[in-house]
Image 1 (cartoon, helix red, strand yellow):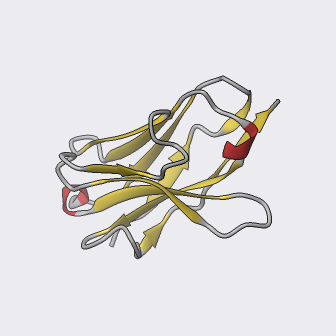
Image 2 (image 1 turned 45 degrees about the vertical axis):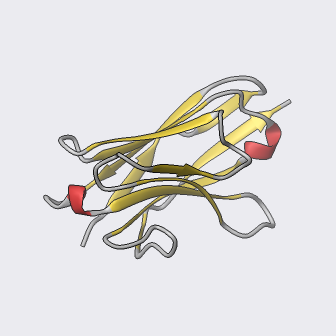
Length: 119
């Protein structure tokens, strides 16, 4: 089992950058695929980005590709999301997720961190 805690959210303006961090508990972090999801007001939770156990494979939603970068540090038990060129459509609660098999349907979730982008 793994516990996830996100940080780094906040209120920014269009065009700004923000870096989210997810810290995981436990000694088996490297055995989990990691991902970031987000949920905007009145909308379903959606996939943002994922990274494989070793970091060798990354995937992004088309809406963030080229602007967001996911990374991980298996020594520090962290998975970060660097966000650039933010716009109001990126406003949402961002959730870190982990799963030992597939990040498509993760078993473990953080509590979320709010990102608000104003125009």
